Every structure is written in structure tokens, then in C-alpha cells.
Length: 448
Picture 1: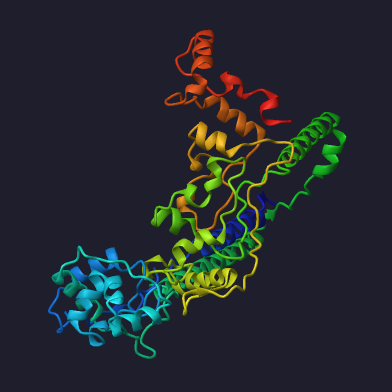
Picture 2: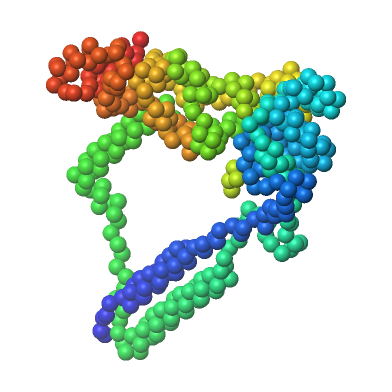
């Protein structure tokens, strides 16, 4: 009887290959989600220039933002009263006098002026003599615009804003289903071909070679002492490498970004609004520590900012979220936004520390910020892009030493280092000295 190769083995390999191909095809094809549908609740402005003054509302908005927005809002009380519809409450002739010099009008004994002054906690309004009557007309036209209406989508007509709607989901499912069906047909066909080949071999008297037992890999490995020795050395070295890497990461918190009790967005403050880091962290210029800003610093602005603009919101953080965080600030400092005064009831804020050097390391912020002129982003990363502040640098000894070796000392306007710089530059034969060349690698500089 003739002997041939093991058809069963060959077809089994084909079968397994087809099965793996099927699994790979099904898992690699992923549906791409379309971008979120545009928010149907877009604000529809139905404003028109005020008929009272005939001013230009567009110019009035610019003047309002430049002169009035610090103390007034259109629809909410701030330092001053809400100004929407103010033209319907007072005569234009009186508004001209009040805006140009409210203090003078109050001193004259004008009953209406005194009443407004007392109703707003006797807060003195800034005088604007530079504004002409035409400018005031434009501002009044802007405040006379009707409040923007929010157009809600018809019931059942659109998805909820913020949800992700899959595009072409049906067609993708059909394609995946068709591919799966084709692969199943191929597998069945391979199984049938294998069965037919076995029958043909049997009819023709062809003997199919039996499957040979595979030798035990572990037994062969155990008999080879050289392989055992090499494997043992490899395992020891690999274990030492991973243990060393693990131990070297102890105390290194790069990327640490804890959730704070009050959400503070550096992206909004340092990025969009361009607030300097040293405005809030003022002690970084004169002290070893940069310090945690007092909540009173926050209130310098947020007395008049009780809510954020619509453009501030992101897909992850809504406008309502940001407004709620401002209310947490008000609660902590005891600020009554309605009456624009402090209640005296305060609550401590338990901030979570992010950067924490070991106690045996000395680091002086003023020396780096004020003397060396190092930008905050050098150590803290692009904070103007961070929604949640995190530890940007590893803050390891190697990282500090590398910085000292590469950073040149700024000599412009720094007479303290002039003499030592001249002497050392001649010694090392360079024009510019690095911090390391001026003693920045001495152990006593950072450890004591």
C-alpha cells in the first residue's frame, strides 16, 4: 500500500490558519465614530438696535466690554446692578449725567442718584467723562437688546448634545457580517476538502502516514546543561534590571495630577486669559517656596466673574461645571454674590500638594526665578495648556544636574556674578559659563 503525507495534518494547518484569519479580520475592523452632532441648542440672537436712542449696538458692545464689564453684567447683579433694559428705567438725560460723573450727581442731592447709590451698597461708580453722548447711546442700545433665546430641538428630532452618534454604522455592520460569512464558508469548504481527500486515499488504498509524536521540549531542555546555565544567567540579569528600574522609580512622581477640591484650570487662567504665573505665585520671586495662592487673590477677579463664557467650555468640562467651581470658591471665602459682600463664614480648602522634594534637598525658587531668570515652564511644563496641573519633570538628581550642565548663566544686568564670571571664563576658556562651571554641581549647594 502506498504511503503519502499526513493529509489530516495539512488540512488542520489550513483550518487553523483560516480560523486565525477570521479572528484577525473581525477584531481589526473597527467602526469609526463620527464627531458629535452639532449642539442643537445654539443661541439664536434676535437683537435689534434700541429704538430709544438709535445707537449702534455692535459698537456699544465694544464700549461695554472695555468700560463697564468689570463691574456690570447684563442679566445678573455684580458690583453694580444688571444693565439689561436700563433705558426703560431712567431718562436718557439723567443717564448721561450719571455715567459721566455719578459722584457729582449724588453730591447734588439728586433723589434718583442717591437711591441707586444706597441700593448698591454705596459702591462708588467710576466716572467716564471721556464718553460722549453718542458713545452712551451705543452702550444703551446694547443693553436694550432682548435677551438671547435658546432654541431647543424638537422632541425626538436630534440626539442629546454631547453624545457621539456613529456614522455609517449600518453599512459597516453589513460589511463585517459579509466578511464573517465568507470566512465561515471557507472554513466549511476546507473541512469538506479534507474529508473528501481521506475518502479518496482510502478507496485507492493509499495509507495516510500517522502523526508522529513530538519530543518533549522540557525533557530535551533539562538534559542540556549549557542551555540551563545560559537561561539562569539571563533570568538573573533580567531580574536585576527590572528590580533596579523599579527601585529607581520610588519617589519619582512624574505625571502626578491629583484632583483638587476646587477645580482650577491653568489652561483658562494662564493660557486663554494670559495671567502671569507670578501674579498668583508671587512669593516665587522673593522666597524659597512658590507658595499656594491665597483665595483672596482669586477674589480679585472673581468678585465680578461669577460665571464663565460659553466659549470656555470643553467636551469634558461644561460651562455649568466651571460655574459650579466658582460657587465653591464663593462658599470657601464666604462671598455673597447677590449682595456683593462677605458673610464672614469661611471654609478651609484642603489643596493636594503636587510637587514634593525630599527634605534633604534644598531648592530656592527666588534664586532660579529672580536671579537666573528661568521661566516657570522650564520645570513645570506648558502649564498654559494644562486643564489639571501635573508634575511635568521627574525632579530627580540626574535631571537637576543635567540642567546645571547645559544652562548658561545670564550675565545681563547681574553684576553680582561679573567678577567670578570673568575669572572662571578665562580658566575654562569659554565666553559663557554654565551653572555647573560656577559651582552648580557642588554637593553643598543642594544638600545640607
